[in-house]
Length: 155
Ligand SMILES: Nc1ncnc2c1ncn2[C@@H]1O[C@H](COP(=O)(O)OP(=O)(O)OP(=O)(O)O)[C@@H](O)[C@H]1O
Ligand SMILES: [Mg+2]
Image 1: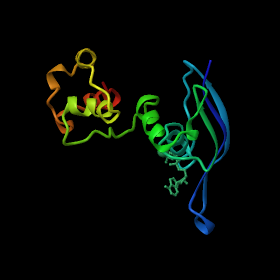
Image 2: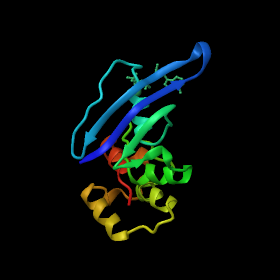
Image 3: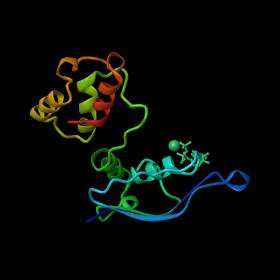
């Protein structure tokens, strides 16, 4: 089953003499369960491609279909929900909010969606992630791996 389809994706930054073509007519598909690595020299457009797939940057032209859905046919609000629920981007830096503790960081995306926190799922997740004893810790009071696990999971 095809989970991701990229069609003639082009992204340009700037204009005139400062114009940069970061992506030039990129097309490929990814099957569900497939493991894919994108490699290339610095500045070749890897991050730009991932940002567009993840809904955090818009293509100049071309299409992204996730599970058959045309990602950029959605309005801003739908796109924000798509970003939070349908894709997981793990950055080198964890993007945790420094003044919120472990539980607050993990539950923020759910609260922003206007949903209720599932306390049982949260408790299970904290257990599996080995964070039960760290629920009140701020990000700077966690190890690197603990920070990464918090940034990856929301409940
Ligand atoms: N916001 C921006 N404004 C202008 N140019 C940009 C912007 N973001 C990226 N670029 C340019 O687009 C090109 C692709 O950048 P991108 O960040 O996708 O590269 P990359 O493959 O991830 O590189 P690296 O391996 O160094 O992380 C680069 O030439 C970069 O300078
Ligand atoms: Mg990059």
